[in-house]
Image (cartoon, rainbow, N blue to C red):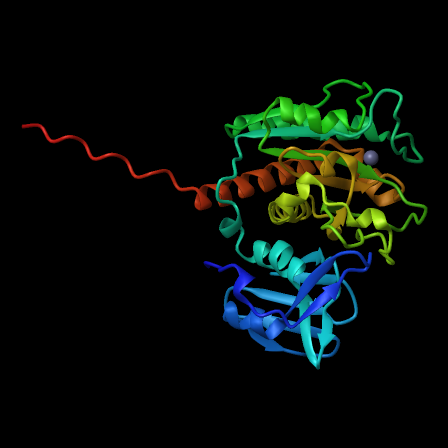
Length: 330
Ligand SMILES: [Zn+2]
C-alpha cells in the first residue's frame, strides 16, 4: 500500500513535548485514518483504525500501541484536543506510518553491509545469570550465528568483536562507519531486579523531545538533544520492528515490544541501527533456554530473518533501473 506523507495534514494544535523545550504538532486520528482509508472505532480505552490489510490499535491511557498486531511503544500517548483524539506528528510520521508501509520510507537506503555488535566483553562483564551465564559470551555466540546466516544469504556481515575483549561504547558505532555499514545491530542480554521479567525487546533511538520508554516523566533537558541518528528515526523503527517480530516468531519468546532509548551505540550510529535484548539472564526460564544451542540459534535465525525482511523492503523501495534495450542488429 502506498502511503503519502502526512505533511499536508492540517495540525489540530501545537504540542509541547514533555521535556518542555520542543514543539511538535498534533494531527487528528480521523485525518490520519482518512488519508489511509482506515475506519475508526472506539471500544473502551482504545482507538482502532482498521481496513482489510492494516490495523492500528491505540490505547487512550498510555504509550503502548499495536501496529498490525505488533507491540510498539509510542513517544507519547494519544492526546485529546477540542474533543478530538490526536497523535503527535512525530509518532505518526516516524513510527505508525513507517511500520504500515516500510518501503515508502526506504528510498535511497542500502542493506548489503551489516555490522553486528556483541555487547560488553573484556573487563566489561555485562549481566550474569544465577547459574553463571555471562552476557558477553552469549551475545557473541548469537552474533556469530547471525553472521554465518547472513553471509550464507549474500550479505557482507561483520562483528565489532569476535573474541572476549573490551571495546568502548563510542568505538562500536565508529567500527560500523569504517565498514561503511548499511545496518548496525547491537546484541545484548537483559537482567532485572524483578526475576519475573522475561522475553525479548528491541530498541530504536528515541525521538528528540520525548522520554525513552523506561522513563515515565520525560522532563530531562537531555531529552531535547537531536542526534544525527535521529534523521533516521523512521528507518530505525522499521528495522527494529522487523528484528523484534522475527525473533519472537522464530524463538517463541515473550514479546516486550519495540521500545525507545538513547543508548550510546545507537545514538551515535552512522547508519540505520537498533539494539536488541535477547532475553533476561535474571529470569529462570529465559536463562534455561539461553543455555541451549537450539534457543540461541533460533534467536539468531530471527535476527537474520529480520535483516532479510528489511532487505526485501529496501529492494521494493529501490527497484533496479530498467535494462537498456538491446541494440537492433541490422
Ligand atoms: Zn548489555
